[in-house]
Image 1 (cartoon, rainbow, N blue to C red):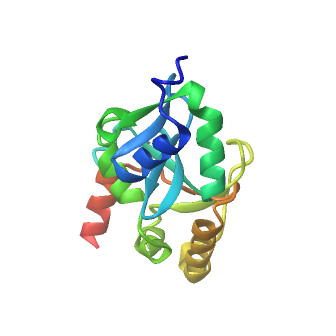
Image 2: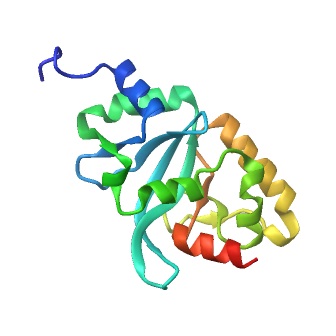
Length: 174
């Protein structure tokens, strides 16, 4: 590839920070990297259930990333990835990001109370485990999310089974 025409890692990171652009895999099966609220996130886009109880594409998991981990991941994935405007990632990606990548840990409290997000861990569906019960452990789960946001290490993540429409409808009813 001609280096004169390809953007540098620094330029790519700047574009991701300043625009509604994500780093997506060329084959669309790898996670998507997004920068929001001063933090890096790795999200998985897959089939979830919407408000009409139909299967749609949306954000299933949100992993928080440290700046170092994000830079390293972008550098490693670059040959297999491309910059993609939010509106081209999947239908309603902008809305999914707004509903699921929130500004601080406390903003997830209502989603936890209503069982619309869970704090999970594990590397495969066979090892997936949910941490705590929001009815009993809400403060502890919010503190855990805050630590995840600050540390940005591999490990626990937020797991969503519903679309942004379902979340908005359910939260607005309460």
